[in-house]
Length: 180
Image 1 (tube, rainbow, N blue to C red):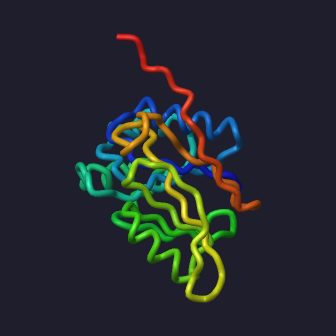
Image 2 (cartoon, rainbow, N blue to C red):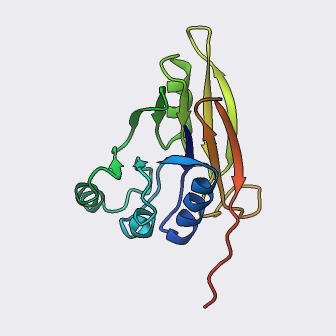
Image 3 (cartoon, one colour):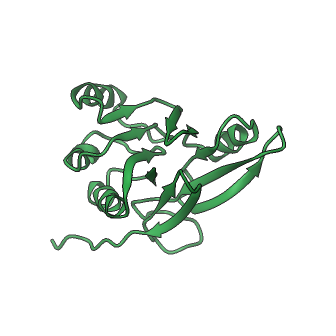
């Protein structure tokens, strides 16, 4: 199973949709959003793509009540998990949070195959050694909005994950700003 991992969309609906469309073209069957989604309007166009979306909130929470109301209206296509998500997709145990230090801590437990987080706006893929002597994938998709990445140009990024092969590829969003 392939998945699209995004984070830090910060109300940039067009970029979020573009990443999901690119991921679907590469075979993605689900989306994980690692927080700082902000509002329900960011998601409206994404729902038209018909792919399940799992999201957590970040430090820029937005209207939580509206996100839960939206979830109730999507018939299971959108799941808003609150601060953290425990998922099983493609036979893999996945933990999702926004903050990097939470992500690293949960990756260390050895209870998950994959831990996803956001917040820093810098895309990274790596493995974390666990307390059980195994390894856990730890990924940060950067910012799909391409904003505020410290020390780098504002490049929108996301990750295409293959849960069968356990490979995670940082992708640069092939997105053009709409003309005004």
